Image (cartoon, rainbow, N blue to C red):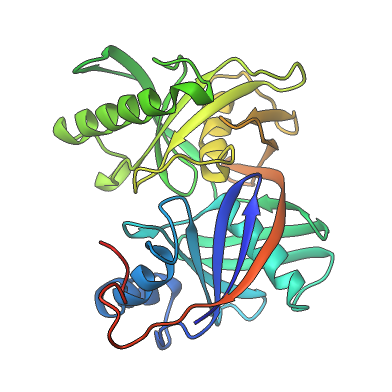
Length: 309
């Protein structure tokens, strides 16, 4: 399997460019389901230890249904499949540029939840225009064992998020273990109480916010991902969900800039527009860099040929 690795503001993306599963025709959603149901060993082989890590997001390049798109892409991680991934979309864009498949300008990527526009501003700077984002419920209060009362918004930014305005733990690298534990507890309590997104959508991302470290940023965040890893970037879909909440509260106007800082100090610059139906369309800008090319090898007698479960 041939892969190209990149990172977006510190968050790794592994793009499968050759040797992935054949998923046939149909929508990206249908092909994602085939990937999950019939070819999950490819995901585990590409992303799990000993070849990958919990922090890596994988991206399988596919032929798009919409011929106006530069590529179709299915995102996945150490535990399953993602609807969308903002940092991953930026990583895919710089990888396609590295391969000579796109140049500077505006391009379209087809994902299981819709078409995402990517603008290659330079070889390493990408702006994505994400899927429509919205807040589903505001100020949802839960009592979390070991934490007490926690209040957050439920919002969609391409994945479902529970966004907690005041982090229960200081947003510093020294607190990563406590942040992980707090986010895991919050997610478990949401599941226990059967609190979901619309149509029963699983809230699989937890996002804590606090004041930024940099004077020219608006906020600092910690994002707990479905597989238990934290997002090294400020999280593209999470920032999109944040913009939807800010817009709903009248705290951010269309076109106004929001600088989101991650737990490691990297940042995304974000704004939004409204479409003709009034939906929030986020625009997230960040930097991504290709950092390796590799051929992943599977030997027949390898006891961990499909990764360490």
